[in-house]
Image 1: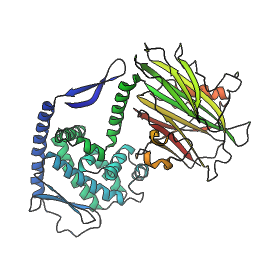
Image 2: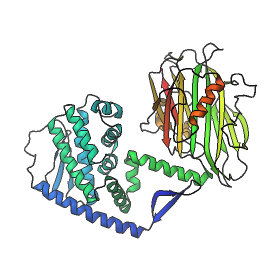
Image 3: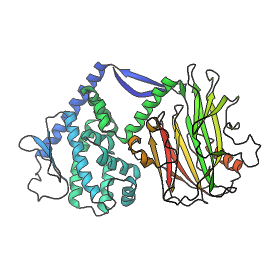
Length: 491
C-alpha cells in the first residue's frame, strides 16, 4: 500500500490516514511519466533549434548550455569545471532532476553576486525589497537541496521566480546571469505545464515518481523542502496521538523576566504553561510539566496568600472545571508537575498552570553569563505551539534573540545554556521569531483565543501592569512530540 498522509480531521481532532493501492499508484505514475515525457521532449527539440552558448566567452559565474549536444545530452557547466550530464531520454524523473539542477546553478550565481551573501533569508529579502517567503524558498533551494528534485520542491512557482529576477536586476545583477536564469525558468515552466500548469501538482507528481521507484525514503533523508517540514511534523503528531492516547489544540507558553525589586542581582521570572483543548482516550498517558530548578526560589504573586503563584498552582480562571488532580515533586534539579485526568475526557479540556521564582543573574553583560535560554519540551501532542518570551526594559537590550529545536533525549534539557553548545542534537533549520510590539498580551494568536487575557492576568498578579517589555514569539504548527523548543537571547 502507498500511504497518502494528507489525512482528514474527524470530530475528535485525530487524523485519519487514507491509503491507495500500489496498483493504482503505479497506474498514476505511468500517466505522469507519459505527460511529462511528451512536454519535455518537445522542449528539448525547441532548445536544439536555438543557437548554443558553447562558443560564448567563458565566465567565472555558473552558466547553462541548454542546447542538446551531439551526444544527446544536456550539459550544465559550473565554475569548478564539473560537468553534469543528464540524457534527454532519461525519463520524466531525470528531466525534472536536470531542470532542478539548472535552476539551482543559475540562481546560485545570482545570489553570490549579492553583497549580503546568499545563505541567509532576511538579508536577501531586505536587499531585494521582496516578499520574504519567495526569498526563503529560493535561498533554501540553492543552499539546502542536494538533488534537482529537491530544488523543484523548494523553489517558488514561475511567477515568484520572475519577481525574484526582476528585483535582482534592479539591484544591478549582470544581464548574462539574468539571461541564464530566465532560460532555466523557461525549462521549469515547461515542466509545470506538463503538470497542468500547477507547481504544487508538479511536486506531488514528483513524489509519486519517487515512491514508485522506491527511492522516496532515501531522497527524503538527503533533500527536505520547507513545505515538507510541516508535513513531517504532522506525521509525528499523528503517531504521537496514536501512541499516547492524547491530543490537544495548542500548547501555550509565556515566560516573563524582570529585575527583582527585593534582591540585588536577582531576576524574577513568571511563567505559564497552557495545554489547551486536551483530549484523552481510555489508555492515555498523564500530562506532565517539567521546570528546571537550579537556584530557583518560588515566590507568591504580589498581594496573594502564601499559596498564590507557587509551583502547584492551577490558574482556575483558565482551567476547565472541575480541574484535574495535580501531583508535584522534585527530581534532582527538576520540578515535575503531573496532571491526572480521571479517565476519558468527555470534552476538550484546558489546563493552565503557573510558576514564579527568583534566581541570581548578577551581570547579564558579563561574557561568562551574557545569555539566557528557556526551553519547553512538547508533552501532550499539540496541533500548534505559541511560545512568548518577554524581557523587561530594566534588563540590558539583547544583541540577538533566536529560536532553536533540539532533542533532549541525548543530553537532557538545554537549561540556561547556549544552544550552540548542542550543535550535535539541534535541528539544522532556521526558525522564525516574531517581534511583539505594544504591551504584553496585545498580539493575539489563532492558537489560543485567551492568550492576551492570560498574559495580562500574569502581569496583574505580579504587579507589573503598565511596565515596558519587549516580546518575542516562537509559533509553529505541529510541534514535534518530545522535542525541546527554545528561545535564546544574547546580551
